[in-house]
Image (tube, rainbow, N blue to C red; front, side):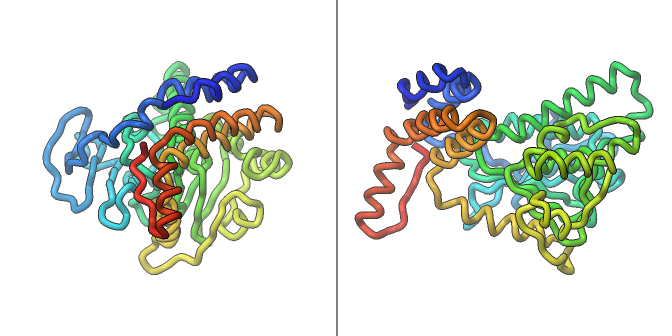
Length: 332
């Protein structure tokens, strides 16, 4: 269903990334929606076993410790289409280690090709913390080559998160420092409890943010404020983060400690009724358009719009409007 004319415009403007994206997933958008089976299985370094966790889709963890470091839940009923990535390293404040980076990357590979996924929420399963950044205990055991490799893989993970073809929401119900905030910055939308703490604090360790923070933070809050935050290693609470545009919504924390997650879930439900193909190309148009001049950005929009014209969903939307009923989109 790729619109050849639209792609020609993109290529003519030199926007190869958008063209490559359509070449890779354009045909998949018209697929029948089939994707990986939503079974309740536990993945631990490639081993599988049954799991009785209600609503649990896939969980990734460390076999030695028996801790599920990443819980992936495919929600059902009125939340069908929403996938929740739950980080669960309680022993290390959800710090990003080699294994967790690997497991998150595996999850990205699965989600990006699953046409049943409509929105992804990233949250913590550990009370009071979102992600405390890189695992510094593990870092002290690395040589220079290993450190470089770890940072490179972390950066690649954040890029994979940013490029997921569906909306992503970070629910920050606790501490999000360093790589933890970089993970949230790679999401489309950030929501936080007022008690949450956020900052890129790497300069305190005589390093800089290396997983996209120096690039995504200025794009989120402006260059001057981003420099101020990074230079000072300042940590903001939810209200302060909202005031500078780092997050979209701030809420008072509740007794369960999941106020941001509940708001993220409510927001994700607002996304569910919309056309799946439209959501995917709208995200692409925004992301790519923000990196170029207005003329090129409008060409990207034109090419993205062209992707929706031949779809069955567009015709269904018009028919539903005429018949005064909710549309039944299939992502085709």
